[in-house]
Amino acid sequence: MEINKILEYQTLDSELFKLEKSLRDNQDKKMAAQMQNNAKIAQERSLKLDEKAKELEKEYQNAKNQYQVQKKKMDEIFEKDVDKLSKEEVEKLEKLKDKLAQNLSILERNFAKIAENMSGLLSEFNKTKNAFQMAKEQFARCKQNFDKAQSQALPRQQELTKKLTSLEKGIDAKIIEEYKKRRAENIFPVVVSLAGNCCGGCRVELSMANISKLKENGILTCEHCHRIIYLK
Image (cartoon, rainbow, N blue to C red):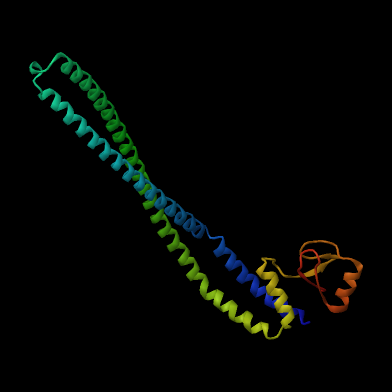
């Protein structure tokens, strides 16, 4: 095998690998993804708060209707002329009035509790709305920064890819296939020299049988890290 060609290929690919890694590890890209997720969480939270608000509204309307019914009954009692009623009827009205007064008191406490819940819900909604807006703005800024970095790297990426495609024509197809397979597994560098009796990548010592194969064939796949080993 013409080792110089594959080494030249790897030198160019190393630059491409670093460019790709810098884009993968770009902090703006990571932050944009995080802000996108935060915005999604805020949206989901808003939907839940909206459902809770509808439940409170329904609870308020039910309490309001009950209050109106109880209040009407109380008003009817006060409109009665007790002088025209018997003692038993007056006592019955007194008991009913006390019961209605108790019901109205309970409903008033319910109104206060509903109002408190609505206030808390509104506060939570405003916090969620602000969190969503902040995430949306940060996402836009980070995405813009990442898009700029990606755009700046693109010409060199295209240039390197073109050169690599051209170099591939002069390298054994099986070697290129093995190289690309390791590359896809983020094993880099893929091609390393023998370091003493060890793999130049993972530093695991080769058996004498494998060293003999390497000397015979010029290249060998490391049994440990799967890199392609060559003799200088």
